[in-house]
Image 1 (cartoon, rainbow, N blue to C red):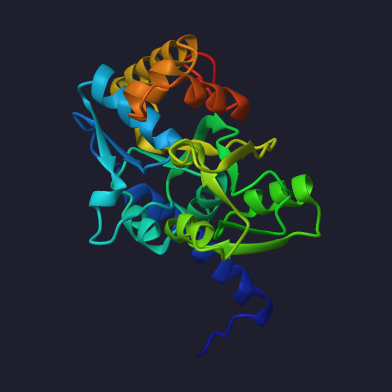
Image 2: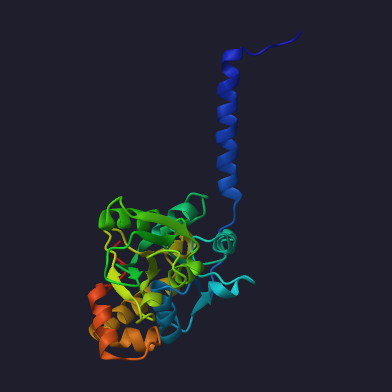
Length: 273
């Protein structure tokens, strides 16, 4: 005798079967083994420099991994394809990314979370003169930069997404009147006019692997990082320029930095998140 199932129940069985498979997969997926050190993916922007400085000077067990060394090509932009490949393996405890890259990375389902903002107002408008620029290059993939430019300049200026490494050249050769650079790069160009490009959003955030959040190494690092930020902020930017960015200390450089209103932010410590 042949027994047939009512077709109305077939979708129900399919849904239950899929749910069971997902549950079993979650149960058998191994958690990442605890490390004896922390691995940090960071680039050459201001936030990356500060994180690496804190890791190298104040936490011997935190290993700063310069993303430029993860590929044969230099990775100076967290929105670049090479950065995506470098992070795809997930072999990092923390990553310093702009908010646009962070949201894109989290959209892949990677087991990370945004732990907190690191820097504000680090996007700088760099131009050859004081006149309002008619054409501006900004970093490809940076929606927040585009929105900040529209708020600052209106919609009359032509805005061009350009690969981050090519922005200084685009300005130098006259392809655009101005470009948006990270403060760590902009402060090295005294021959240009530097203007802040304010935004309500942070310039960089810290992503943390879910398995690292409760580790003692991570908690120690956050305390060390916060101590570093307070020390740098308390030095009226001189320690940041000389010790972290390795920029020659000059009065005009310090004044230019202060006008940018760049803010280093502390991260929440245990018990406050």
